[in-house]
Image (tube, rainbow, N blue to C red):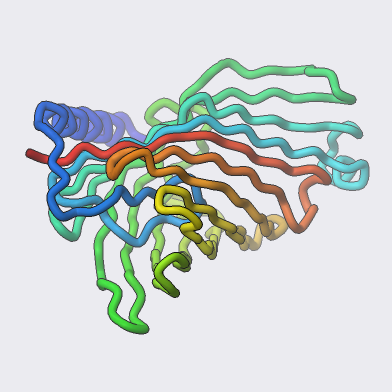
Length: 281
């Protein structure tokens, strides 16, 4: 990323934080906005935008592991019994309701990786920032009968802090949700990453069913994957629970694994997090 673009991104981040500070200074008011609706912990983005003037924080920790079988290790020139682990120390996403139909978004991860061979750690990276995500989500259609709740998400993914990122990307998504019953909803999305210079386009899909088995408790089961022409396709499953502490605070936990076994025998993910919302006065 050029220095000029990087300065523009940093300025946008500062402006976002100042805007959020103004919201923090105001008292929360339930009004008529209902309970908090979050993007996390699923891979499927919510089809809803945050209410106008509301500031929403979604944060969590996560762990993922990819273990390579002997046959896969030989193909990619890695030693046998090789495993790569990723520890996300903080996945932070900030969302601000600019209007009834538009939200602004800023996301930043802090993480480290380590490599294990035959059960022993042979390498560990420093704690570092991942790529920075800046963008917006736009409400397109409100649910009406067979017409699903629909939104469009556009984010610019860049290397403000991530020196290892090869090039900037555009993250473009169409997000949908349908109410199947009083307790059951279906969310689904389609989109992917578009390189700003050159390279393959990654098409990603996700489908999630969510069930409210108690007034404050919910569970979900999700299928998601990536389709690409430069490497193997991946298909994954995750599942988890959410607990609504109050209308503006939600806790979550999830776990998941790889279905295709293209990249490893025991791929595994796990995470915990929370989401909180502060409404305008």
